Length: 270
DNA sequence: AAAGACACCTGTCCGC
DNA sequence: TGCGGACAGGTGTCTT
Image (cartoon, rainbow, N blue to C red; front, side):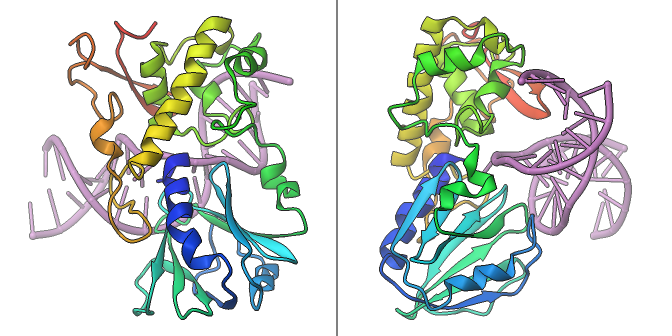
């Protein structure tokens, strides 16, 4: 489900409810997520969450002895609940806070993950090799250009590679490439330095605008309070296969690239 | 080293 | 109405 904007929207919605709160209990009804929830995750019990941070699509519940790492996968979501309604089928985990509220993790497909890392969370194997944050200063067109030399993979795959840049998933890769006028199948090594400058800006802008809209709600993604994200109405290509390009009026095309559905304008994107 | 296929799992939608 | 198959916002791992 979520790419960077949805994870960031979730983080912002949750942070005021969890920062400074003590975790009274970690209730695990279904430990079998992408990996089994490790017993060490119980380490969060009794600890105070000093901050809720984000690295790529990971959420970091920081406490003094360690950090709970949480990934939403394809279908995961987090909600803050003032009371504890009886859990439904895919409500796998609750974080019970000393405020009486709880954070509930729901994930039908169970591609999500909950891990624990003592000390510095960025040393965890899942985080250690991630590329730069797209909204940070070290993410530039020159950086993309340098990393892409001699690479023949389609540029869409390249920008969706988390070791190159984090947070860009299937929706926003398609949207950013459309905004930059770059064909998704173009070899990463065959995009000029100048065009990578444009692409880096487009990635930043698309993600930033999506965050401001509260993310994209396609099926069931909601902001932490349950309201939908509004970026879906701003999508230019994703999900618009066969419809008119909003720039040239031609028909948008669909192709499967890297086993992911891709929509683009064959006229505007070269 | 890099590219591509496959795996994990459930819900939903579409055509017959 | 029911059923099979395709598809869905991610990403680690295995094979070429």
